[in-house]
Image (cartoon, rainbow, N blue to C red; front, side, top):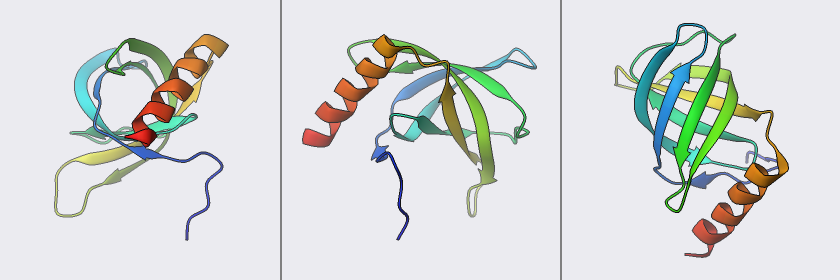
Length: 108
């Protein structure tokens, strides 16, 4: 059993993302989100030393976030990739919005 410091909440949220090194911009969805990171779907591989700027739609607001890529794995039997991202430079207000959203999402 996997033990995590922060619980992941499986939820599909609209995400607008930009790979900072290439300025490439794309729309995608999340697979899950936690207080410290998010998993998203991508159509192509991205190298591990990349950072991304994200606009994550939390229904009542769009959160601008910066994240670093932790891993990128191809989905089984698919051409798509699942990408694990860790939030960086997370200010207190943004952190509080994520906490409130996760509390609501987990109480449904």
